[in-house]
Length: 332
Image (cartoon, rainbow, N blue to C red):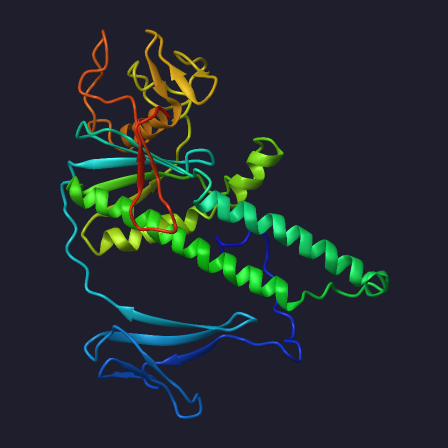
């Protein structure tokens, strides 16, 4: 299967205190007057925003070691897709600038950074305290580990993991909601996201940057953008981003393999064209992703400048503590 890098092994036996996901079909679970009704043996009801008309498929109760998560799976009718997509956007994902967004309408590009409160900060906090807890457990279980026994994690570790999962999920929801609202505001038909399969397996950006790049859940961001955009009739497609960072958008250099390129990246995340124009490197890559998906999506750049394009992006920070994004007027 595509989700595995090698042949999967059969699952091991559940431990004495182990728990598994409980699944109830729509024959066992129903929705009545806004309440989820489960079998009597389960022994509880749950208030939900779904109605009896909702096409409930199944209900899952997922154990989290420190509690349980109730998941409702249901079908939703989606609007028809637009056949001729002319209003398009492109997204470049990264570790410094998590999301860089551009469109073919001449609007100012958007760069979403962390600023010490977003996804990267949550991951950094979790990795730091996870390491401390692991060191404590190793010290406490030295004798057991010498006997080749498995390391046993305490409740503090599982509370930390659950807190991390909830905070990260909330931050991703707010990030994706801001982007989808922006697409609706600009009346876009299609958005192209640059993504390479197994790109986390062969990355080498230095110890710190690589650790953060591997830890950022890009696929979760993509999946949330997909389903939120689909509910509004916006298509989200993936495209290999090969050669989009090397090629010069300002010099009409189509992103493909070449023996030599017109120019190269400058220090501090900038990209200088052959004519001396400076553009943000991630904005250059995002425009190339859009151009690679459809060469006719963007007109050719003029010889003496950048006709009809905004090169300098607007920096946005999505604060997980509040819904409103903070916009900075400083350069990126």
